Length: 489
Image (cartoon, rainbow, N blue to C red; front, side, top):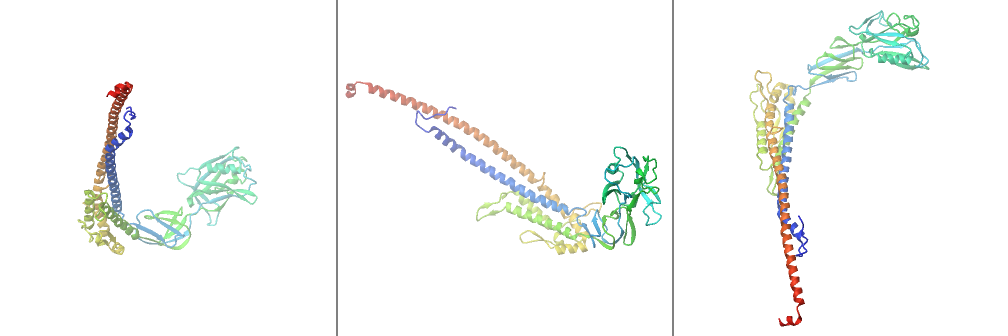
């Protein structure tokens, strides 16, 4: 569209058109912006409400599980000596535990020293086995016999010209994955090879035999035979023997190949850290944590009440209303939740069927308050009925929901991906899209209106320009007439 300059009329046509279009468009833009802001605030408010309801549902679901009121804790009278941890449900009670011997891994060392890590040794094959040895006397450091572990094959380590140094032997043993670890240690100015079991326990003891020794004798203490230890050729020195842990639980003597014991007490893992005469292991219900979970439910409920009350409020003095004032969903949700909180839970076999029975009381402002001493006292004397109040009866042929199951089912009607709030939010999102469409239509209409105004003013400007031109022509004609003729007029 060609814009008029106003040369013919002298008018500020751009300013006139801009003002007329603004007078038509600004109120509509402001109305759309105001409507969009209102709807956006509603969406945000419903999201806030939904979040509080989901938090309440999460707290309620936590009390609806089978283990909610049987949460346990385990303690040790000397955790630096025996450290217990829960691995499942344990029998509540006390256990006396003593540790005579800790499990250890066997370590062997070369009897002779070597000048350097690069000292050349003999070639041949080391055959490494794991198993259980026997000693003639308890103080012996060499085997009287050795029984290889069932199902565990010996591992051959070939030493040839590419790895026949002390360091090469170390690396070859470690690369063989034979259940042992080799290392070179400095002993004064020279070096020794250490070979240690990767796992503790007597059944992880080491046997090393030699074949194809370069010096043609695989049973002496020379050449590669210097690394043998099999009960026949004992060139290596046992610096530490493999042992099983020896301990007793309530006087019952037990052993373990490791210091991590997980198969003795159901639901309890034990870490044996020191030898000790007597450590007491106590397994109790963790009523503090259970009470905290109930307190979380009370707190989440109070947040819901506060949130919905704020969003639906109206201050008559200031005229300020909450973003959801007048909406039916929050009012309905709050009323239903309050009814559930104060209602009797039916179908239970125990003596507790209301929240106030366990110390959860309604306050004057509609919030809840938990008397922890009442709850913890009932957990000590009537745990099963407290559990049934919240979690229902799951032991009968026909199961019964407790308070938590009923509340969670109610909250599902409002919160989450398929609740009433989600449906309402989807509707509000549709209205936002409609506003965007209306805004696009408005801008198109205002563009057309602007073009129409410019066409009209262009025509007017051109007309005035022609009139001005005709007037100028007539004046010029009059001015050209003789003076006498003009005087006669």
